[in-house]
Length: 228
Image (cartoon, rainbow, N blue to C red; front, side, top):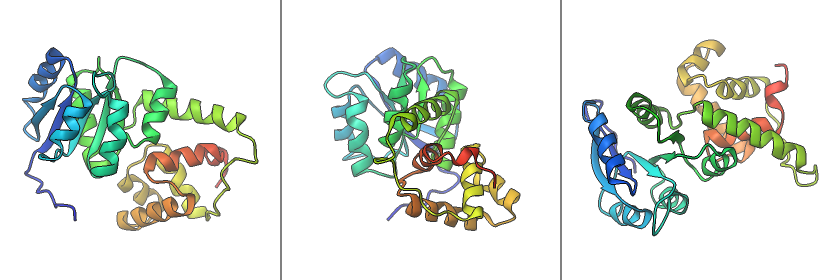
């Protein structure tokens, strides 16, 4: 059962990175934000997983490259055992195939370690409130890699297309355009709760486990190019 967080409670953040100076810099930069609290730091993936048995952050800033266990190894374990924790991957690499892989594994966002504190703050807030924070890195990676994959995968192994009605197709397209639930609700003249229900139904129909999965489905099946 998930705990309902009071609007006055700060978002609890854990930083997992093997560079002490980077952790200190992020911690100092975010210390001015009253709605965020850094509750712990880990220097590798194994250290992080052990800490999660005792503390429960809302969001984890997870470095990809760490000793003992890296972020790629830790991510699936976090999502398996603590699925409600949002995970923002941090890296110096701009690797589209890596971004796609991490999003498929359940990452909620992907940031360059050169991102300034306002971007990190925005990502933490958006992931906590809306599950995902999409930026130019994630968008370009998802679209480029999935279009390439769609071109090389034979029809024999391609996922069977679900039967979506016009309303579901429209909402899926708007989600791919990064519209918020409220924006979509206003545009299709439905309540936000109804839009969320349709989004959940889309996951069931397509077999997607997350919003990123829905976007991948839309790209694979050329829904973005279809007229509604």
